[in-house]
Each structure stands twice: as C-alpha cells, then as structure tokens.
Image 1 (tube, rainbow, N blue to C red):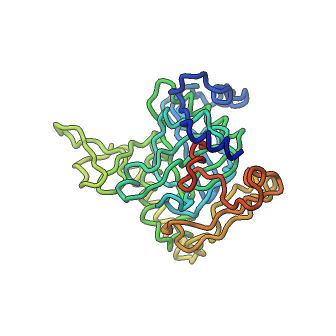
Image 2 (cartoon, helix red, strand yellow; image 1 turned 30 degrees about the vertical axis):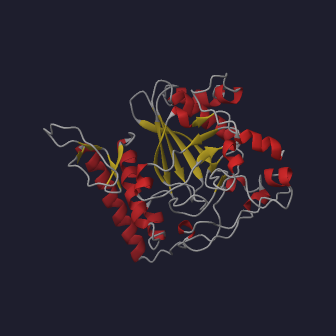
Length: 360
C-alpha cells in the first residue's frame, strides 16, 4: 500500500477539462431525478451560475443557483460531514484551519480523479490571503468525510455538488465560494462580539449583505489588504478600475441600488446586535477548544469520528496543531491502511507528506 501511495505521488492530479483521458463515471453522472425536478420547480436552468456558501459553526453548505429572472435563490442545503480547525481564517500551512473568505473556482480546480471521491480546490491562498502573507495548499471541498483543513462531505453529497458545479462551469469561466465562520446574523454577531476575528468577519459581512439583498453574485476585488465588493468606476471616469491587493484602493463607487439595500440591512443588524448586547446575551468562547466540527446529522452515522483533538488558544496563529485521532472502529482510512501506530490523518492541507498530495 505504501509503495502504491508513493507511486501515486508521481502522477499529477488530473483536473476537470484538462484530461486527455475519458473522465471517470463519477465525474460525469447526471444529477439525481429529484434534484432535476427541484431545478425545474425553481425555474433554474441546468447550466445557470451557482454560488456556494459555507457556514462553519452550523456545519452547512448551501448551493444557490440563478433562476430565469437572473436572481440567485437557494437550491439546497447540505450538512457538512467534517471540517477542521477553529472559527477564523486560515493562516499557515499545517494549521488545520478551513478557509474563510471569498474564492473563485475555475474548471482547473475541479478534480474528477480525487482519492477523496471528487474534490473542488478552493484556490487558497487568494489575493487577500497573499496580501496578508497567509499560505497553505490543497484546501478542498471533497468527499470521504475526512478533513484536515478542508470541508469534507459524504461521497453522495460531493457527487451532487460536483455535478452542479460542473454544469455551472459549462461555457462559463468560474463560480464563487463564500466561506463564513457562522451565519452572520445579529444573534451570532452578539455572541461572538469578543472574538479577535470580528473585524475580519464584519468585512466578510459586507459581501454577505450585498449577496443577500441584491440576490446577485457580488463582484469581489482586493486592495489595501481589504475585500471590496461591487466596485465600479466613478461617473465619467476615463479609465477602468485596476486593483492591487497591497496598494491603496483606486477611486470607486458602488451601484447605488446594491449599496443602499446592503447599508439598510447592515444598520438593522447592528441595531439588533446592540440590543442583544445590552440584554447581556452570553458570549461564545473565543476559541472552541476542539478541532473543527461535524453537523449533528452525522453524529450517529460516524460515532467515532467526533473524538476531536484539543486545540490551543488562538490556534490559527500556531504553525502546528495536535493530530486528530482517526483510529476508528468503523474502519476509517488511518487504521485500515496503516494500523494504530500511524497517528497522522489523511490530509488535504498536505505539507507533511508529499505522497498524500495526489489524494486531494
């Protein structure tokens, strides 16, 4: 098995749309009849754009799809089987943090030959991450319900999500993933008010509010080490906007219709959150003390995979974290392949072992 794994490292992962060989059946299968009927019911063309939205604390992944009126509506919510790290962005290779932020997925980031059934690469680090000198690799949405920096689904779930993404990329260069620590509601903002990541999360909320109020995919740029949403040139500007992630933002304006509705939502949310703080709503821990989470829907299905490793305070800032003990009675990959002496999990943020890189 070790020899086979090492040999696999010599073969680069083949990406969607780039393979000279026929794609495997798992990457070309049609959507289930029930999901096709749901698309028809919601008036969503098969090849219309999608947006994926991820919420760590709730352990949910939403697929939004554009309908015939040009608006994005929610199509389906998938419970996340496993995510790792803590609430907060990813900082370093090996910190086990699943990313937070806005990411662009191109056909090259779709891996039909993943050993985690199927996978979609986040493209981490994006220009915002690079501007903050964050690093990491092989951060994925994939199957197998195993995670060390990824958002892991079941094989059945990733088959549907992959098919929806593949169809949305037909004749289109990319789609967007929005990854959040939790649903950015007044209740959650009040609960997490003491978290040092709050300024970052409030910046993400601007894009969240643009999307939720306009029901259109926000245009995302980065300048001055900050996300900027739906920016356009000022009236009568002779030149197009040029953004540099580390330099001062160029003069820009936001579409008034989008800006006004988003501003109204932000102010309403701030008022509601302030009222909850006045009422002394309990605060959430600054860090969870556990490595990641799993949606409640999977607790009984994978009872031994919720024995989570302890993490240290402000774990995101540390170069390494204790490994997750994946010695499962249900025959998880670690014990089945390597026995109880192998303490490292199969990872997607795979800086520690080159031969595992091909598995993502």
